[in-house]
Image (cartoon, rainbow, N blue to C red):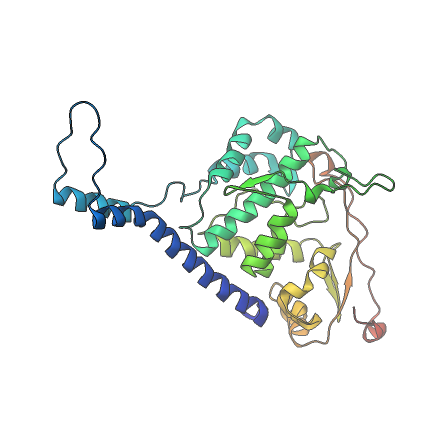
Length: 330
C-alpha cells in the first residue's frame, strides 16, 4: 500500500500484524460458536422453568438458529465515525480548531462514548487503522477541552520545578475498544508498533501548529489510502516553513526527523519516502541521493481558531549551492 517508501522492516511488521489479526478473528469466532457447539454435542437440557413450557424447537429451527449465529456480525463491528466527521467539517478550518464548539457539542461526548464500546475483531486493517487515528485526534481535542487550555498543549500536566508531572500525552484519558490508554499508548504501542505504516505520522494532529494539520473530515477504511496520501502531500508541500528541499539539503519537521526510523533504517530511506510527494528534479534528487537532513523549528502554539492568523515561524534559511555538499549528516 505504501510502495517504495515502505521499508523492509515496516513491511515485515505489517505482514506479522495481518497474521495476528487473522488469529484474533479465528479465536473470536471460536469463542462465539463454542457454547452453541457444546450444547448441541452434549444435548444439555436446561432445568424446567416454573409455569407453562414452550414447545421444543424443531431440528430445522435449531439449524437455522445456529446458522444465524455464524452469519450475524458481532455487535458493534461497524463503527460510525459520522458524528465526528460532521463536527470536524463544521469546526475545523485549514487545520485550526474551534475548541469551544467541541466543548459545547453533546455529539462529541457521545462519539467518545461510542469509541469505548467499539469492537474491532471483524474490521479489516484499514478500518482498524482509521479507527485508532480518529481515537488519537478525538482524544487530543478532548484533552485540550477538558483542561481548558488556550495557549499550548505543553501547558497541560506540565513539570513544576523539581516535580516531574506526567505531561499531556501520559494522562490515561483515552477510552477506546474497552481499553483505558494514554495518547502515548495510542501513538507508540498501537499505531506505530501494530501497523507499521509510516504515513500515520502525517495524520496525528497533536494540538500544536507545528504538527500535521487536523483534517476537516474523519478517517475511514474505504478512503484511508487517499486520505493518507493527501495528508502527506499537504504537510510536505504546502508548509515550506516546516518542510522543503534546497538542492541536497532537506529541511523536515521535527515530527518526521524524530521518527525517521519508521521510514527505514537510513537517512536516504526517509528522503526516498518523502520524495514520492515531490515532482521533477526534486523527486529525482531525493530518490537518488545523497541527501542531508535538518530539522526545522517547531511551533508549539495551540492549533486553535484564535491562532489561525498567527505568523508562521521563519522558513529555513536558503543554503548557497556551493555549500550544500559540506552540510553534515544528521
